[in-house]
Amino acid sequence: MQVSRKSYRFTHAITRKPGHSVVGGLRAVDTGAPDLQLFLQHHADYVAALESTGATVQTLEALEDYPDAVFVEDSALCFQEGAVIMRPGAPTRLGEAGIMGETLVELYEEVLRIEGPGHIEGGDVLVTEKEVLVGLSARTDVAGVEELQQLVARWGYRVRELKTPEGVLHFKTDCSLLDEETILSTRRLDASGCFEGYRVIHTAEGEEACANAIRFNDLVIMPDGFPRTADKLHDAGYNVRLVGNSEAAKLDGGMSCLSLRFTPPAR
Ligand code: CIR
Image (cartoon, rainbow, N blue to C red; front, side, top):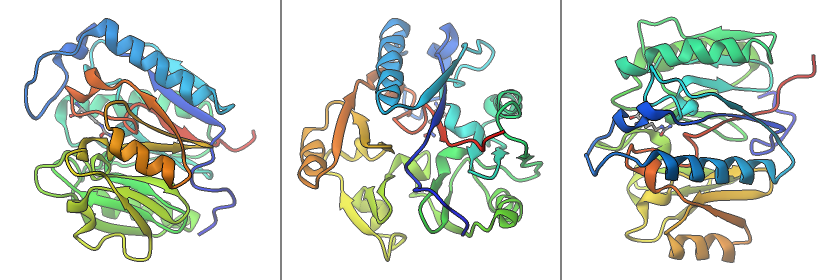
């Protein structure tokens, strides 16, 4: 695979502010609508954490027609060589991808698109140093994975198809990349054997909801409120930054969902 930089080093990120419509975002279980003011505060803290690593963060305006548009990760996949516009499996989110494409064509010469009929969402894709792992889920199907494989083969990437655990929204709801050889994972996902060959750190029992963290340059950014897993990561030598996530969590969103992280080619 032609990766010249580490899979967790990025110069850029794109985020999008939550809008008033976020209260109508998709959720598996209704635990109440998110509070927009608190969501905006958490979002600002998240952007500040990304920026504190020296990266340039482009924060797009809210898209009121798309309640879940704050979760930009699902709309595209960004590599060094180019970007791929996803095809979300949630009908209410389909239009977000094309809109993100308008931003990405400003940054990349090569912007490819999943045309369908399959579906794939960025939350189901974990890019590591050596491969692109994609979990089949209620949002990502075999045809979507196959189309991604065909598209990224030109850049030398190998796609490995896996299964997202039953009832889990996205593959990355249950795992994150910590460094070139280490994955943070729930025990239930790791039990499938999908991370053979990697070093795996498990979320603490009862703290499975923090498996969706991100390694962004020198930081591991994880949701606040999971002290035993935070201690584990700290003890393993990671520089952990906690960000409030209570409002995104009401919509099944976590740290990875809130940004696209990438290093665009010099133009
Ligand atoms: C959804 O159901 O699509 C949103 N409410 C949450 C998306 C979270 N995105 C992610 O895990 N990548």
